Image (tube, rainbow, N blue to C red; front, side):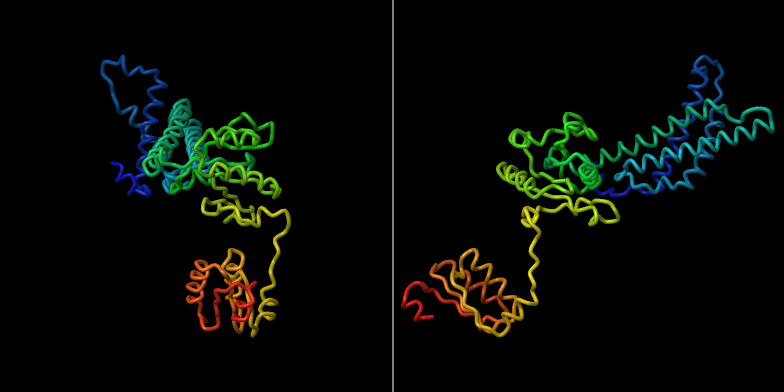
Length: 360
């Protein structure tokens, strides 16, 4: 059964249509029974035709409205508030049409085709049934594909619009293996409350919360958060081995909507308390082109990164010097992978030593 649900990525639209029609038919029968106050139970000779006729008339009208609203094209496992609103308006439109037909029939025949009370009761039952089975299927699908016990826990820093949008993006993505445990915020008006069933805690309690709970990721969902605050949050998160992600600016959202794939790891430049320095690559290329460049300490962490950057330019020759044997070995191997290895010379010498300088 579990494998079957996993393979059933999208329920066929015709099957959804049949479920909607069945929901309306059963709802219509229930509406008639409720309106008659279960009188059929006391009847000796019960006739189903009366109930069936009313239910059939309601179903025919509903089918026409379903065709107009195309409710069967909603992907069930992605059902959200917009889809629920669409179903509500669909059912309300159908009820409005039934009332209109009733009014026309009353003025022409002097009697109602379908009692108005049945139409109203059926509206509430049908709306509930259509929403309920969609949400039930969505929950079953999500729990089958991504069981809650296997999901990684997430906390969202920021309980504003961006924070709520982030949670909804995570909920919407069925491929997501994450579970939002809490929001963290500075606003006193939000602390202690719940947003979409998720509690909001004070940002001051971040260290305590990370210490008590098994958290894998912290998502920063505040658009204009100062770099100093980002630094503070990141330092606290790293103490508890929690990875920090950040929500991109609204201008980068696709069609005005945030998707889970857009939430990225925080970049080092986002922690700087100044604007990022943009390097003029063309100017550097003009300065380096055709020249011989010597780099001391070339196998160290800073030196090796400088070498990697220099390899991208049109130099004449690179002379790389270091006195650490093992790092130099790795540097030689890396230089051999370069398109122009003959233009790179690596020397294992101590530049502070006179013999070493003479060797170079």
